[in-house]
Length: 548
Image (cartoon, rainbow, N blue to C red; front, side):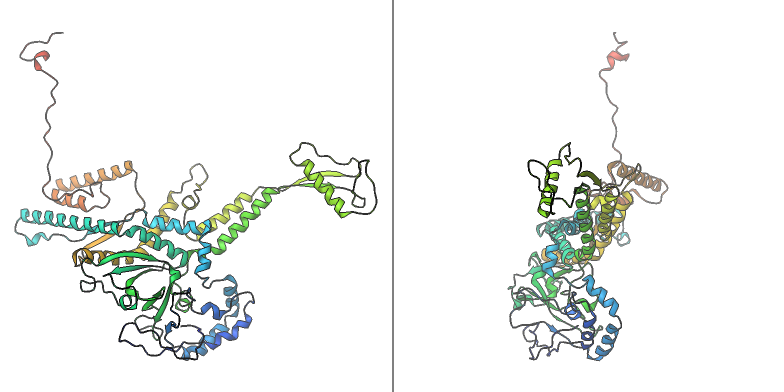
């Protein structure tokens, strides 16, 4: 959408599919923004470069091709330029802070530092650690059956069929290694701002004729047994090809219809895409239609921590200084016979200081001239340095919202200090992250797997993310006991039947019996036999009194 270099030639974009030719596009250029570049900091990149489309890596876009864009900005050129000129101070700060896209090579280098990598890895691991639990929302309508026995038999059959389906789905998700794929996609999206995974369906050729075709997740678009696999693609090998910038009311507005993947034009339906932190439309071309990476958000805080850490290290290493008070007007070159005075010699002064340091280091005795020299030690107070470094670490942890015990393994100090509350808040953040970013991708994958296994979709199959906050065995047993007591009282009061209580137990995702098939009649209370302690003859029975 925003400032692109105007081309003199007219190169039509590559058609989306054979037989479809798009009209020629003219790349827009906003002249008003150029008038304010002279006010920007000379050391900061220009605004034009910040808003220009991201340059793909060599080989991503075939030579001779260029990305196609709609041009619909001439009418608002003047107003946008005036708006930009009215925000000169904000622009200078924005350029100086480096809030534009840094590029995949620089983001990759940042990911090599533990301070950038660890927060991204913690969120990715926690988001996929407990994984998901498949379930079915289909129930039996008892009103459709004449007797309770028929309804019970229908429930048992439905439970068995659902169990088989869920088992097949879980096995296929494990074969495709979906859990590992989601972990890598989450990690990439936090490091680069965007992540992709390619859907291999039908064994189609890996060129534009096979990949630049829409993929409809229906029984007509995905045949049974056609899902070959899912493959992660590094964002550096991708670039958008065509997107709509004419009107926000049109479909595909700032959403590319297809992407270049290392020279192969691929339709967006064949790519799974994750963008946790989206950017405004004005920046999407510059960010390669990705988002703001967590590493870029952490950049000022990590640099501040590194500067503080190095300063604390330097102060600690040089917390004490040896001060030599000597005759600066005398000649410090000493002969073996004694001291001699004359012109100042800088080399001799340095030699004297080096000799003093060498002799005094690690020694109990410091040697100095009785009449012409004096020696003292100045120590720098070290109190408060640990607090400064701890505050810089806390600032790094505040941006991703990760508790210190999770990010750095630092437990809180104090008699009754606990991180339980912070961890629960963090788990709530992870749950929201899962719903916003992982659920859309997982829903699409599960639909693809259903079509691959059965050739049809079962809309009643759903999933829940397993709660990261887990009770220990003792508390879980107490909760289960309370639920059992509630069921017993409701059954005795006539509110529910034992079968309904068993159904509740089967559908309870936190129950200790969640993997047990509870359909059918309850087994009832088993009969208990009276224990036998041997023959009755020796214990006063009919055989008479026992002998001692």
